[in-house]
Image 1 (spheres, helix red, strand yellow):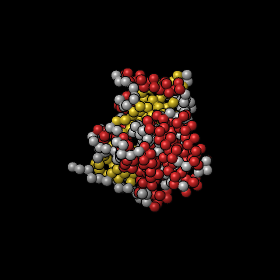
Image 2 (cartoon, rainbow, N blue to C red):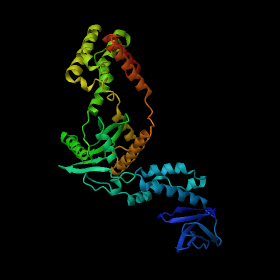
Image 3 (cartoon, rainbow, N blue to C red):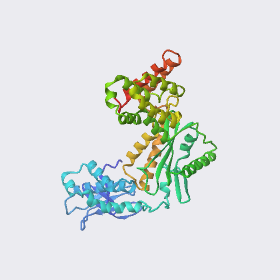
Length: 445
């Protein structure tokens, strides 16, 4: 027979289980192998409820000498939800309380009786301290097992070593490492905002699978020196050997290269336009505007044609641009190798995977320099996201593409083909690219 009695359960302030029946609260008085005896929570009241060991209702007896208090039940249910979250999350206690208060849809009386976040914080913080390890005061601290595993119980920290007082933590599962070691492309980037104070930076290495990027190794580094990075890659090479794989990427793209690409295409050149007093001429003179945009368009031009195109551009542009071209020649043709900023033949260079991931990760963390336990919980959720994304791609689900990016890439490829088949001149190719710069640029009109 189905148990249809209106019983439910909530918790006392000390976390003990309470039974709720028709608006009254009962505490467990005693328990046998066959019956649980619940007595009314109000002192002196003799009403009681019997359930079996599986909490199925058996009977109720006795009369209450007081009225029910539905508001107290509402408030206890609210606090139970808050405490459950406080014990498993590192979100700030007041924020959790405010979120659950907003979701609870309390009656007007219960809402009036509810504590404000500042009043509730002290008791809830004690609840959190019982389940959360103490915050470390230095880089030398132990990591409990719960933070050494993924959310599904797999090993998550593949390296935890200290050399010359510099600690390196690497978070990666074997599946993440397998994708990293099998990827011809790897993308490197560091962030500081989301880094705990015990370390200097979070450094991520992304690999490619199914033409999508995956964060494969997330490291906490105590320095930014060459030795630190050398140690990081030494540890990864060890794990490649352990997995009987090789860590030999064909292309490595760092945050340095990423920033150069962004700068050379727009920002740094536009600053030069400003500093040389060409802003007014840029807006009023179509030839100067075309010359500036065509210079920016050298980045997606085939590397073998860049210098020839630059010479043609210099000869074809107004004399007022002489200083601008001198700057470009010194800075981008003489000082910085073209391989760092030419982007046509390297299709992934213009896709700023790591920067986008770090922005998303920083927003997910919701804290500036979070404590180490909060960060690891964010990393655990990120690993779950990794498994989810990988599983969907294996089953044929495709990530929604950036239509604008795909269209631009196709247009560039079409123009390159026209030039290679001698259907257009080099300057026509360059001017076509400059038109895309004008169409897609946010800083240059």
